[in-house]
Length: 220
Image (cartoon, rainbow, N blue to C red; front, side, top):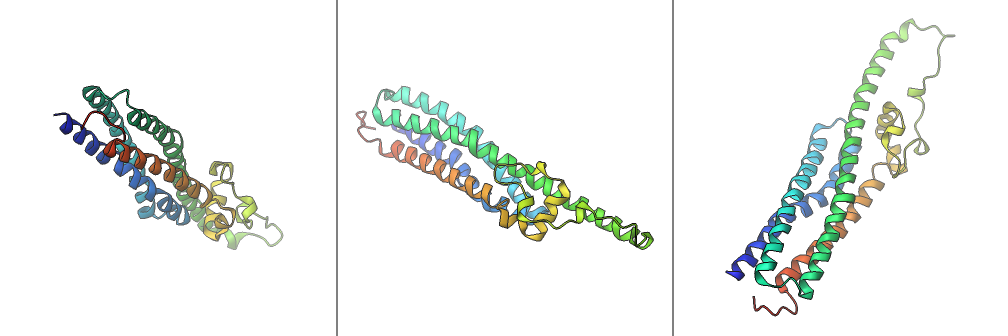
């Protein structure tokens, strides 16, 4: 019975956290693709689905942790060093997931939505300008800030939200490729990818500890 409980716990942990590890690893390139092609519903949809997978399976992971404590109590191994290390690493991985990965994903999803709306607004503004261009006098033309060239210096940095600039300028930057030069579409996703790597390493270590159980005195 004890071996059965332990096997179920390890299997449940893999099933619950495995999708988080995979989806979180796939999210940065998906978000980068969506930011590079604002308005592309397929790219944005992929990023949103991956974000939902991470959120849903993270909640299931909490149930696995509770079941893990029940299993450890049943096996009478709560005081063993391998389990204490596994619990500490699990807690650290949970903190990384809750306070670094999921918030970063949420911010990127918001930016994808903002960039898509900005492109629509910019397209509408361009159409409106084209429709009134024939009635404008030569001496009455004014330079529009919306049509001003967008350089890398105009864009937010990796620590600055997209909302700090007019939406149309964000879309223009993404269209012109200046976003790549500034690292707007790359810096955040690369940093998120590194954070996900840390999470995956922690989780892999916990999985190995749960399977090998070095120093276990229970015989299971």
